Image (tube, rainbow, N blue to C red; front, side):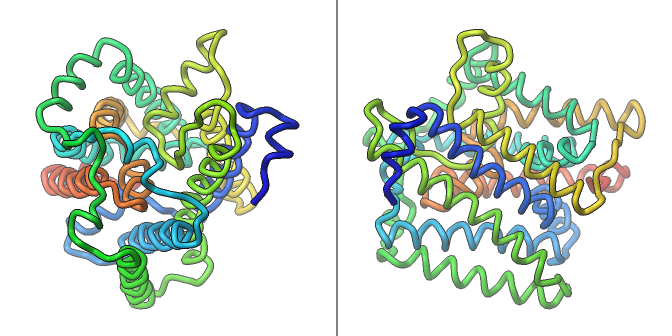
Length: 353
């Protein structure tokens, strides 16, 4: 894939933003049409069900793993070059941040990626929650909450100056993650058939995973031809939400992949909702719901930054390149989500998004 002529014509920064936009558009359309959501899956699982929401989440996760591992096998990207693999990871951040994020997404009635998709469909509750999420994420990145985040993350870190490749640590051979992804995809399809999920929704669920692979491939290709160092990345919403907020607040902010990603997800989800006749304005259902949503959004902002990524960034994007702390964070997001559901559902607080 020769992208050099494009990069020379529009510049490296604009190319990165364009690639983020492409990734976001695919993600936004696919996530809106498939109703992909980790929070919904954990709530369903907590109730002892393996229903359509679990099936959709599992298919997205497994196909992301298949697409990305397949791309690596073809030489289209190298997971070890990604920043989240090339820098030290935090086990304590993954555990604590994952738990906090999991609780927050149940309170907010959607993970950070889901809030962005819902906001594009006219859900004003998600607009408010998303803004709070972005503000707290920025505070955790470089503001008042940074010392707390740094202290918790430093409790237990990976050794050797890099993160841990889970496949290598477990002694899984080269194509093992790809084969594992295919096995999970088969399981997802079995659950989908049991729950009578239509083929169109399954295609869009796979499309969310495909978007993750697109982001990895495009940023890797850009890094090979760029003069300045380029971060190899894909879909995630904690850091990009904070960066996008500062892009609109600072005159010195620069355009990059993150800005294009957020814009693309919002545009893709909005257009998909309009074409499907699903765009409509919705607000909070009362003071109590507003308070819970705002609290959940704040917890996700801090928890996602501490965990090294959100339900998408750590849970799918990091997991697809076998970042060990990302898998750890994902596990504890599930634990936090299930525990919060079990505690809140009896009191009628776990209303589906």
